[in-house]
Length: 113
Length: 114
Image 1: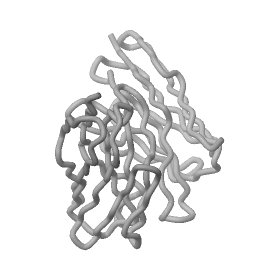
Image 2: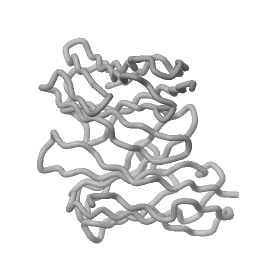
Image 3: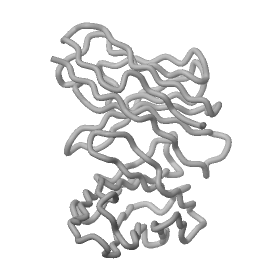
Image 4: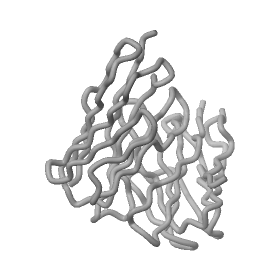
C-alpha cells in the first residue's frame, strides 16, 4: 500500500534562506506528484504538478524535483519570504488507485522576518 | 476562471440537523471527490464520483451521503450531523480523460457541529 512521508514535520528559518522540503513515497508506480500549499484553516493551493516522466518543474522561486526510482521528491524554495509561511503538502496519484490521492502529513514552514 | 466552488465556507450547526455542503466545478471534469481534514489525521477521502450517477465510498464514508445528478455538482449531505464530523472539508475534481492531469480543490468548508 502506498505511503507518503514528509520530512521535516516543521521548519523555522530566517527570511532569505533557500530551503528544501522532502517527500518520499513507497511505491514508484505513480502517474504524478503534486505539491500544495495550505494557509492555516484555509484551502489547498496547487503549487506544482510533476509527471512521473519528468525530473523537475519550476514556478517562480519554487522548484520541484522527482526521482521516481528512489521514491523521492523535493520542493526547493529560493530566497524565502515571510509570505511563504504555510503548510506544504505533497500528494501522489498512484497507478493502482481509483483516482484517490495519497497524502503526506505536511511540513509546517515558518519564515521569520 | 477554472475553479471548484464550495459553499458555505463556514458553518456552525447543532447535532442532528440535516445539512448540505455544495460543490460545483466549471471544468467539465468527470471525477469529483470529498475529503475531510483533521489535525493529526491528514486528508481522508469520504466519497468520490467517477461520473454522473456513479459514486463510491472512500475511506471514511460513515455518516455522509453524496449524489451526482449533474456533472458539475457533487453535494455532500450530512443527514444527522454529530460532533465528530466537525472538520475542514474539501471538494476536488479532475478529468479522467488523461491520467497526467492534476487535481483542483475548492477553498474548503469549516464545519462545526455542537
